[in-house]
Image: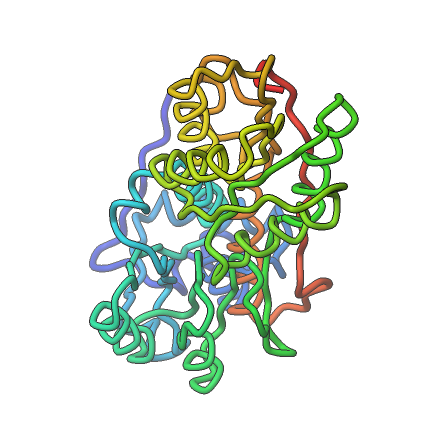
Length: 338
């Protein structure tokens, strides 16, 4: 027979939960706060008591005592078109959400693509509305990290800024090694003239992937710049063909730009991979949908989000952190375009 929750008269208290679970009030409080300093047996007993008694925490009173809001912010320094249109952001968000499901923390999302948006975000972040911040897709000269450092707000960077602070915490993909791997693969398969569609140079991924290309290219560097979009990749590919019609391979710094490059190559009657081999970066869903499917560098975006959230939770709880700078490995996924 299913055991029904036993509800005491009036609002159940934390003391009642602790008594029902057979633990001290401090242990019950640590379970509610998501602390890891609790045994699995005590955690299970407290959670069962919460269900039996129908206990609901008084969040306002709890915030006064703990000085915590149980909320964290993900701030994306991009437009809503990019945020909702590119699978990278959805993958990172899935990883963040998966990690936070194991905690009492709630996530809210903000965009800071313009100075006006950034000002509103700053006012909210520093007004005791959140316990910590995740920053994603930063551009150089973005003032948010410096502002958060000054205010003493825990934060974790998704990507390495141009000048990280000595005490910053960040999670990034090894963009340099991934790009170098892609270009070396093209050379090993017979390419003689490898060009690149590079990303924006005011972003970690943009200049890191260009650095990897430059480290591996054997002949003259052939570089055109895009904005990580499909149209940006198509425009850059057309410019490369005009400059170097005899190029035989291209490394594009994102799969969306690679799909645009593929379109431009088709319009120019260049066969892929027979005439021009093509490699992208990310292993986004679009890489499996193009014709031919894209060879690409896989980056673990969900793991990136998960590790960002785990770092932030540790900072909020003031737990020791073994590695403040996490660099995630990449690998090559071979498909039909190269």
